Image (spheres, helix red, strand yellow):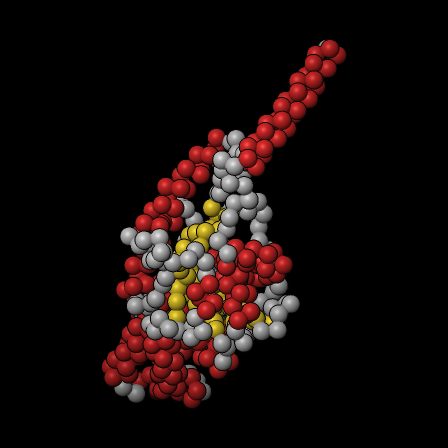
Length: 359
């Protein structure tokens, strides 16, 4: 285990300082606060980079809720910023994007059924093509829950399989497909060669991007989780898969942490703190060479640019509880809490007495 001197700092500062970074993925189990974390990361990056694009590939599209602004599949400038853009991409290919020809449709759906994920891979490749021509300094991905994210990283091989399948169909049926497309009166641009060309072009883009994804200077993956068993398990699975895909990851954000900073008298909260501590210890033991950022559980949702900016300070300065246990300040706090509780109990008792007198 790393000694105190070697423990990486508990912030995301390392990501902000890595000027060569081009792609930042933010992922984890559903409901752990990925969108909030990716939104804040993009805000922090916009302070040190010339241009930032945040892309949501989560079908739930919480990005619009986080910034309280409507986003589409075209990059839109985020209100209050001059260099932060956001877009929401539907990971499933839309019917409007495909040629609406009966023969062609059945051919493409055959292909989609033959290779699971080919439609997603094609729409992802299209999006990457678009993003690459725009030349942003850094791109942040707010990804869908874990399983979907891992599929996203398998797209290069999915496209390769798709291309192989197309070639085998071409060899198998010779000119039949071309005859069929002519018979259905399909334009040349929707012919078999045109689709093959399109797939080839996408494959080139996605292979180039894939090389960048595997370059730790250009790409990193930030795992977001909460201090609970399922989230710890999911994070471990994610870290293992990422290393299998050779994708760099050295940042974990643990969200919704209860800090023992108030004179908490609730047995439920105290039990929850103990449970969280058990999993926090396991996170630190498993990932002692990671930058682990702990974020406090807040009484309200983080919505809107101002709230995101306010919470962003917790990402670059480790969160310190306002009251430290065992100090005079903490004792004063406890005494005033007890006084308040006593006052409330006395007034309740008084109300009860009055009620009885009236009866």
